[in-house]
Image (cartoon, rainbow, N blue to C red; front, side, top):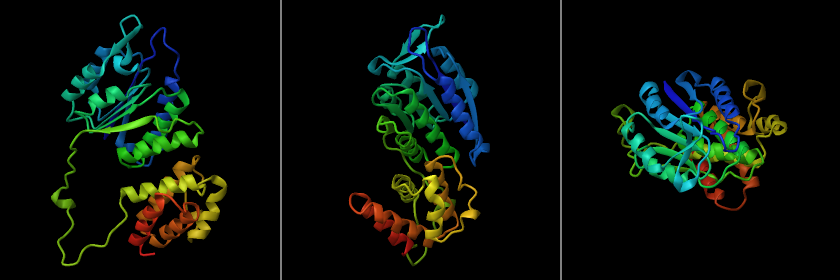
Length: 302
């Protein structure tokens, strides 16, 4: 069970943000996620600095999400005892999260100009997302929903960040480059003995990895093949029965693309995945994705 702690602040004298909607949309997304039983959501409004430290002790979150205003170098905007703005700088936040580094895996700072604080916190926390410039309400909400939808589907933080950015673009908002992911220096990826592949004389055949599936998902969205009106035709061309797919009517292109690639990978349908690659090659004839698609096709032996 992972606990997500959402902290919001919109003090007197600051522009009004749609914080209630952001929290509600995140909660609704997690409630419909296939891994919903793995997450618990706790939210706190009108947060003061002392509320943060108490919540860290009482709730023990593994993901901390701040939604509100940011001012760059001066810090994030919380509230004081009478509801006015109280700035907390990056070093202070980094010092707090350093104490909880063993329990917190990811911090999301969904406020304007919060990249400075993200950089400081990332010295102690594996993954931190900040905003490199101002971000509007709609973009902030779209990013948050896409990010947690991906986590709820069992994807990595890195993939979730990418999907959140894609969600902004799909909503028609030109702010998809604003959320930036910072990683703790020298993150060590350890593999347990149980997870290590058996020793054999022959090299194991290459399989699609997370990065390959992320590329296919992103390109499927960008190609237009994941649009509602195009989904059944796509299924026919890649040789699967559309009626078998319970996720065919997903509300967003991103959700459908994510579910389709996951489904084909889980059923080891390399033939259908190969046909998707060929579909994408028609659209992406040049550019950096050509080599990616060739690499994926070689693993599928198509």
